[in-house]
Length: 113
Image 1 (cartoon, rainbow, N blue to C red):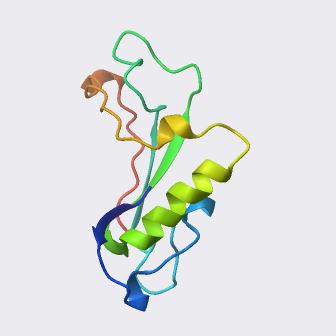
Image 2 (cartoon, rainbow, N blue to C red):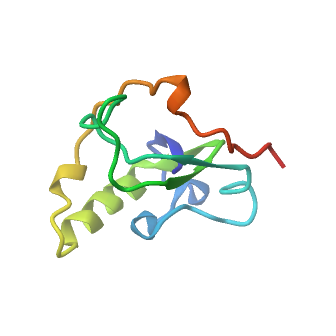
């Protein structure tokens, strides 16, 4: 995953037109400091009583927040609407799941660098 601050700018440094294919990796500062850990699927239907049937799940998250243009996010939404699979359910903000109890958390997190 990546976290972005969306900016209203046409400056080249904030443009990326291919978010649909995954993380923005530029070899400089994007996707450089990445946390990798075991987790579970997302969504509000899973909690401390109901686990995901897809386990274990591994996650990779860029620890840095990056700036990206609104135009780039518009392009992502456009690309999502063009997919044969219905991605309509992913075009709006979603809620967050409650934090999992400590005794259910994996103890295999890797240290930074």
